[in-house]
Image 1 (cartoon, rainbow, N blue to C red):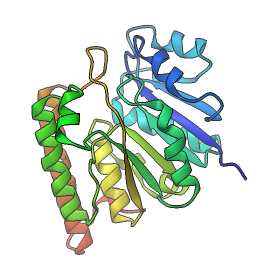
Image 2: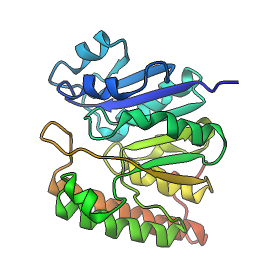
Image 3: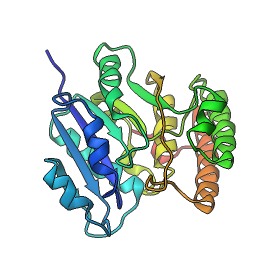
Length: 245
């Protein structure tokens, strides 16, 4: 029996890249594409509707994490078996989405990540700023060390989940900001879900969304805070809502 696949795209001012991102996804692969719009100031919504996407618009700008919550809640409500998040900024290669879905479908992994850092040269040649590459490597090392995983990258915006992951992880308790991504994967490790990754080509360009240096620092510190919470919860020293069903 074929699994129902829904692709979600948390969007903010993605008008210049949305159509190219959607065109990359093989026709007929996804049963539905849901775009969550976080009060974009451009015509993202109009383009999404023209492309036949299901659009959910926020009345206020709520943040990247809040946008994901909206997308995942809607995907679950529509009965998705496999949920794939692709950022609509054309940074990731959407043509690989069926590979992600196949690994979930076969029960090999519960979560599949698209890794941008197969090699240092390839990653930097794609245009990733050096400070982001260094911080990515440091945080990924710490996250692997503390959670017992062996992932090549923890900070990608290309992710596939089985339905049971979204049903069991208390993601609605997570931040509405960028650290949502880190919290989600650290939660997944805490609850014992099987996480794997695949190398994906990456494009950095002016049109692609990217958090600024100051936001990156806040994100990094919040990720480290979540790792400390993981340790304290694992050793039954303290309890935190994000690690409670």
